[in-house]
Image (tube, rainbow over all chains, first blue to last red):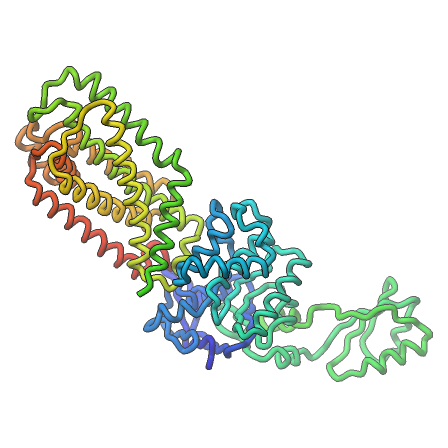
Length: 298
Length: 253
């Protein structure tokens, strides 16, 4: 069954802005799905419709087979949402925010308190349970929003740019946490500006721009759209690039090489080795997904 | 249908105003003490009895009612708008809680604060005068219905408010004048005939009159008419708010 099924979704705001122009999207149960797009592409509107915070103009949306028009309450109960902006009460304690949210999903207080302990410990917030939310650091606030979204044990988790403004260490911690959650069977829909995040975590990726889906493919298929790749090699001395069989340029102890997919890196290494040059490191120049993304939305 | 969500929201709303009791429960006690002292004791002692009771005994029920109206209304309008402003209203909107429970949860908070302040002000009034007790059931019926009606009206205000000013405009420019002109400080019987008729367009007149009947045993307007007006007002605002919530007025785009 599809965790999320969107057909012909149109959203025109009262200002006349056409945010979504008829999108179709299916996300399978258990998937880790990324919805990418530049600012104003329609990502947040799509999420708004899924969570019923935005009223759609036309089209159908189903969450685990439950239509949001005819089975609104059931559809809502299946979802957990981590919005882009902090939207908890800044005067309330961490534990109260999480336990109240459980209550709104009909989880009895005694059970909610037990669940809160588990979730807050998992997200390293248990020690802060009695702190007023406005006193938390930015990273802790992000984790609080994830804890709040998970307290009713949703089958589908939607995260709208969950790692925006989060430091690298914490971001990696969150990636591990989300991967673990997905392995336990939770379907995850993620929007992000960090394309590395989508490449690392997701199985399927859709790119949205100007209210329509440009591409919706498994990650590998999307990456295979790249015709060329660029790598940077750190070397111990100058390389004569004219003797290499691919496009290359040398400068400041580094060689930048560009080659088409299928090109043998072994060949390249042999050619460099012939010049008695030691390669100290090798790294892709750009995030690969970023290149596909930039090309598609141009 | 589970009522856990309703219980959770009610508990949260009561905790909210109890946490800031110095802003929510204390000010009405101080303000009303001043009313009792100045209008009741200082000025009231110079005024003849009204309907056979001292002036201060006459104004106490009206001032208690004024406190219930103001506090139940402002509790819901400010709490609901605050939730909208901080966007934590989305916690409720994305949840499967039915609109009826969302509305009742906020109203329960407003009613509790309104009645609690009403009790505090009544106790404070006993420092200044003795209170008669004609019919406790009439007192409770008018107090509870008024608190519910104005909590519902406060909810409507919170729904439509786009900035903090919008939450204070209605109490300042509509609610306060209607309350002051609602027979709190005078009996509408003393007004010229034309103003008596105009006063009957003011719903607060019916509430104050009925509530006063519960204490003093007389009223300018029959109690059943007061209850009818109050019930109509309550049902109308309840249905109106549910309609607005269904349509997402002030909440959804």
